[in-house]
Image (cartoon, rainbow, N blue to C red):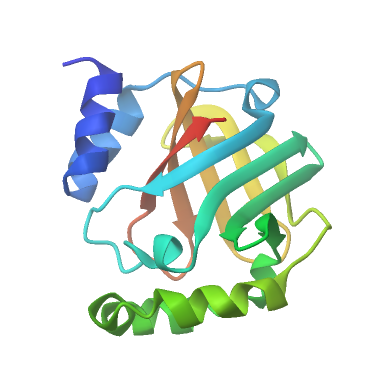
Length: 178
């Protein structure tokens, strides 16, 4: 199975972190210049505490205007897409509350709060960083201990591994170019 097909299978069905990282490690690096643009995102369910949390909150994807102008959390709202300031998102609380949020389908109230966290300012930068032995495009958050490392699946698809200090294992996700 090629990388595109394997990733699509992982998007549709849950997998384990080791299998997702094996695919990630097999992929070539991506240059920062090739990451620029608007991206639609989706989590890959691996049993990570953050599985499904972004989707519940209305996460649409990411926006990269330049290496200095990166928006990690682009949300879908009633009036269209908007960027959220990740520094205002209570990550540890979201991780602890994730099982409850998934059970009670609390997406509506969470989504209703997201416009209060809106920002027009960039909240991250793009750099080439070594992760898992490969130098590749990485989004470094300005105010959180988070790096999103990327590998190229094809010209319009990236596989991401969110390296967050509070997690033992990375949160795996995919970006599709819009």
